[in-house]
Length: 102
Image (cartoon, rainbow, N blue to C red):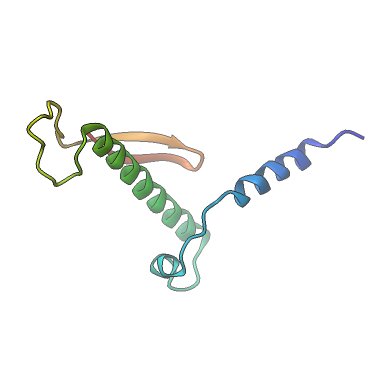
């Protein structure tokens, strides 16, 4: 008997959920102070996603340049940080405006 598309989709969602990292309770307590509406959950999710993307991009640039943000540029480095620019990223939850380090 073939597996239905719904079952396959549900299995894929379950597999993705199993691979998610555990979020510390302290962090959740900062985001959730009581009951939340669906809109509040979505807003918190988008804010977390924005912070996560911006942090990852900053770390990637730091790795590429060879020094962390806020640190002085090494003498041997020819590339340097040059502020940030705004970009809109299309996510599964809709468009998200982020600041990309340059």
